[in-house]
Length: 157
Image (cartoon, rainbow, N blue to C red; front, top):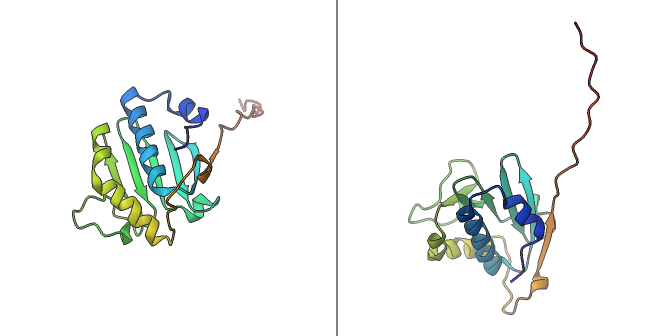
């Protein structure tokens, strides 16, 4: 599969090594199940977010996401409420979004994770090609905006 972009390592540096490994491991699983796809990586407040979808418009057409937090990583599904979840593994109470919280690398071996990814992909109407290559994943990274220098207003006292 595709090698993580250097910017992703820059975004993950502030996290504990176990969370970094979990995030990179989950990314690998997602790409194995979602390719061909588009990936969009960015910082959002205090977390790193990786979005996945069939088009470059992953914010609108997204299927799933990886959210990296201080002590865990979430695998979220934009239309997770529509997924079959007999075991009640998906968390969330909103109209559409559902997620799975992962805290250990060993949890990536749970078959339900890949089953949810396949189900979400299928419900989005995408077919998976049998022979995938690195070129099947288009990655974009939103880099940090340069700090804007704001004019300091004159004191009012």
